[in-house]
Length: 344
Length: 270
Ligand SMILES: Cc1cc2nc3c(=O)[nH]c(=O)nc-3n(C[C@H](O)[C@H](O)[C@H](O)COP(=O)(O)OP(=O)(O)OC[C@H]3O[C@@H](n4cnc5c(N)ncnc54)[C@H](O)[C@@H]3O)c2cc1C
Image (cartoon, rainbow over all chains, first blue to last red; front, top):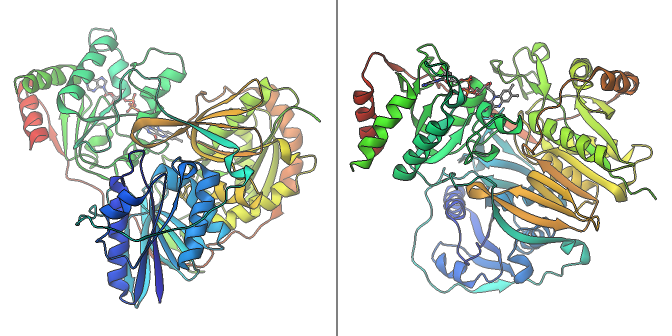
């Protein structure tokens, strides 16, 4: 019989984040498809009772937790000890966790400690002949594989945005708190806290409906032979402000910063989308002054509707990569777009 | 005892991202890329950032040294080294084996950690284990943590953009987390594992002198490259496919900016 362990960590305010609730839904669905399986919830955090109560009606057979101030922070040493203990106590054969940065950092090491195997950023699961199968992407979103494993325990981190977040009634969960001793080694690292990037404005909004991508064209010489970087900055910021879109960038544009060229103050490598950047999930994406080359577009794998504005009718977006390509000057178009948006 | 860092960077080759990749099922039941051995390759980008950061740190910390541990088909590694050698000084530890993305992270990690354990003169108490936060092939973001675990390194950091060595020798590290934020941590000192994201350095310019110096150790390292068996562990692949991603692009030309803007705003609001 499969023993499923769902692992999640609480946020600073004691809640579970959306990807954590999505992974819970994945765990519930897996339990349902396997039929003969148990589901244990394993939480980590400073104080986990509120989070456990919030998911009390999820259908879990058991609630375990590792709690305390040392577990309220994201740190490899303490997280690895905590999750290993949860795996042992639950005798899990399959472990599901959200692919948050905290889990992504620690789960492979825990898999190794538990003599298990791991697949990360899982984008789908099914059951064939009583055996769980997963889907995950290879070569930076270029191809998708369906595979299964015999080894146990099998650790899976679930990509964000694939499953609906679990919703249900709150209740009172009976949480068994596991005692985990931290040796000195686990606290050699001190967590200071979170910090915004050096860029002036917070432009990355994972929950936004729209991704606006800025390409290097915004800083290139335009028809009048001049560059217009301040105008570009203003157009983009105004657009972001009124739409609350998330801002992505091509590599060429953010690289200009490292190369010492003038670049927009609100952009950093964190904004970069693509092969060596991020693969965000948004329902819509609008590319501006960006050529749409393959190493960039692999980062658009999970953007459903795609439009682009480019002066070049032969740019890569035209080659089946966007739904609509507007062959036009993005400076002109975005100005008009901002005017219309400001009129409400 | 020296005060410098012993920085071991794990990084190998991946297909040039401008190439079209076609998966095929290999005879062993393990997927592979069509004409894999013929594909031009580049240094795995995030591992590349790790290498450049390592060289930069070594250059400003006396008595430091950088090793690059690379597992891949020997002939392709040799090609890669022709360009890489000119970038920054390092000593190569080459392992002759598969660089396929379909191999299992733990299988690769086993070969890498065994190779690291065998490095003569490596002081593991001064060791910083560097690599990319994920490869452009398997893209699992798992190998470096497993290498770290196998080497008993329990201070691990992933998606690192910045490392500063403080006056007391502690390491101040910024890791990328959700929503474009960083997590700031301070680790007492080495040993530690850092899986790098982009870092803060541009790609170094080619330096033929560095190339000549590196080549003196690279060629012998390639010659004595041990062959390693890197596999897919116990995975059974049911299928691997490139999804149909070609869209019917509607190309809108000669439409006034006003009209385009109206269409876009309607779409944004829909
Ligand atoms: C190993 C490797 C990894 C890479 N990883 C990434 C990655 O993660 N992300 C990424 O983005 N790239 C990546 N690249 C780089 C990629 O191949 C391209 O070079 C890059 O995406 C180009 O950026 P761009 O389209 O902004 O710039 P450019 O190619 O310079 O294109 C600028 C575009 O702006 C348009 N333009 C100019 N002015 C206007 C105007 N007024 N109105 C409308 N359009 C205008 C031009 O027509 C042009 O199409 C990688 C490359 C390699 C080799």
